[in-house]
Image (cartoon, rainbow, N blue to C red; front, side, top):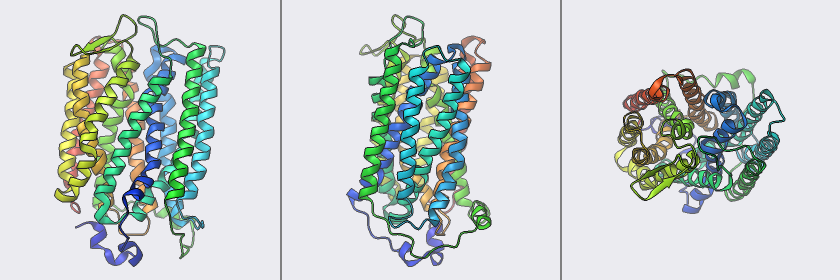
Length: 466
């Protein structure tokens, strides 16, 4: 029995008897997440790593990627639960959550366009320090704006979806994650000019910089369109009983109280461990293809199974990720539905084992065909985990009316791994880059094995969910 059920007396009747959510309502709620995954996967999987490798010193790309991404991700970690908690108090007529989504999206669009303009101007006339600091600052502001919208959106799901539908709702959440990832990566790969000479990174030509600007504009348009659909389609009820606001009380709410709510604390810890492993692989996949597999440009490509040939690391990325997504599509919705029947934890165990196998393949079978086999395992595990993770968290939410704060903390447990993952990967690949046999990458993937195993096994400590 979940913590929410056990403490039903602490929940108001309106919250305990949520009406069933229709199919269209579930889709409409998650359209925001679809757009957000297009946004972040285009940027983090392809656009920003390519910008860093091209418009900053190539030999320092791992370290520079960490410098660009880490400060912004720390900002996201702070903004996410803070904004979610503030939305719990909001008294807007259109509801507590949607105004934050509108404001955050407007600021998000401004930051996207600013990053595109800076990339266009990074033609060699600006100093390396100027470009690096500019990327760092704009990415931090982009994270702040996006998470200003994201955390209250997470609370909309907890506000509106009844407990009996959380598994299927989590399936839609996972499905939109996969669809957004596929569209984001393929969109970026299609629009960005990345042709290179043998052994070189993509040339920093005018056409390349213009294509980067185009991607940022397209991402901005997608954000506006899909956020508008979600805001118009999803109906909230305004807060009818105002909560007196006190900074002292407000800040005290961020005490997780692990002894009082141990299950929620264990879910946060396991999410942090597993997501750190996922991000450590995701951030450095492009560089793995280039540095370890030797896919560097025309004449230095790779083939797999006699039917797939790639010439650049960006093309390898654009093949790898669709394999992940097709495999994930086989499990993402089904796993959410199945978890309503057999329990969440069994699905987490299975998904964790599959993602552990991925890291082992990257260490012991370093070839492009093996990488595609790893993509299959990663997709099956990632799809199941993405689907079940949200449902597991909502099952053990502390039985209060602070869904915005708690889901903001849950979201933050998926954000801070981005910092840890990129710093971990950047440090290992940079400090060990002169050692033979790509020891830095082996060390990185060895750490991810430990993270996946710990995050999977510790789910057993969650007693309030099956």
